[in-house]
Amino acid sequence: MLIQLKKVTIVAESLLKEGILEILKAQGSTGYTITACEGEGSKGIHASDFEGRNIQIDTIVSSEVGQLVLTAVSERYMKNYALIAYMNDVEVVREDKFK
Amino acid sequence: MLIQLKKVTIVAESLLKEGILEILKAQGSTGYTITACEGEGSKGIHASDFEGRNIQIDTIVSSEVGQLVLTAVSERYMKNYALIAYMNDVEVVREDKFK
Amino acid sequence: MLIQLKKVTIVAESLLKEGILEILKAQGSTGYTITACEGEGSKGIHASDFEGRNIQIDTIVSSEVGQLVLTAVSERYMKNYALIAYMNDVEVVREDKFK
Image 1 (spheres, rainbow over the protein chains, first blue to last red):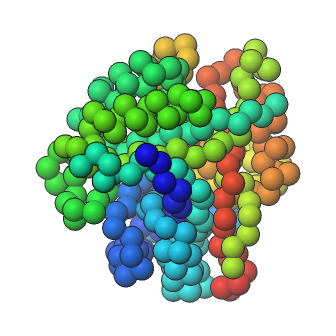
Image 2 (image 1 turned 90 degrees about the horizontal axis):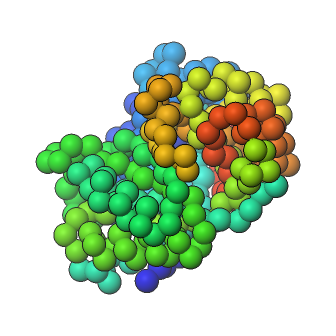
Image 3 (image 1 turned 180 degrees about the vertical axis):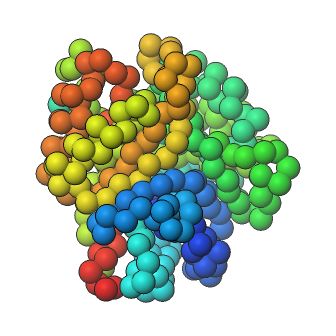
């Protein structure tokens, strides 16, 4: 019933939302969850002080798509924005078994 | 100090909250966290467009209870609702060591 | 491009926020994310009923720092507060590669 996939998580300023979702779609992700959050990075600057709240975007994908998403997001944003991006193993219920 | 457990995560429409919490309790979960979120699934429909915001429910359980929760939630809801359900390994502080 | 680190997660009453962030900084964490949530623990008491909403604090650190954070947080708070603390493996994009 369970399959091994990756959960990719990206925490960024909320103004990057549409750009990150574009990348997700382009790389093959078919769904995502967005959660509002606040944070402080290694520069000691609260993003919430100047840009509004941060967002955490999660998407469940194959390991291959996860690598592509992380690479694309990092290449596009990491030089100029505070952004955290990572993935971890998850065991996911196969939807098709129940439909 | 740390024990290996599972974190089960269920992302669903908020109207399913009480039903999912019933399942958690029935299967042996003794605590949970709920976070508001929004999302889009593979059907391209924003749940937030018609049902209010989504919720993410997390619970820390044994691997066995995790399997039971995922099976019960999926069997009850996955046919008719957009729902994501998965679990992953976590190393958890044993509360009893500090009480 | 990816390095293996730990994500430490602490779910607690929001009044513990500053104290937990102090511990994170003291133990070597350089960034964190805070998400508002609600929850119920094994005592069946909603923290939100008497103390305001809960918070989930996440920080990405080395395995060694993760152990130190979990130990310090547990020793300081677990006897007297409802608190969940755990960590899991994550594969994180190396920021320095893009800066």
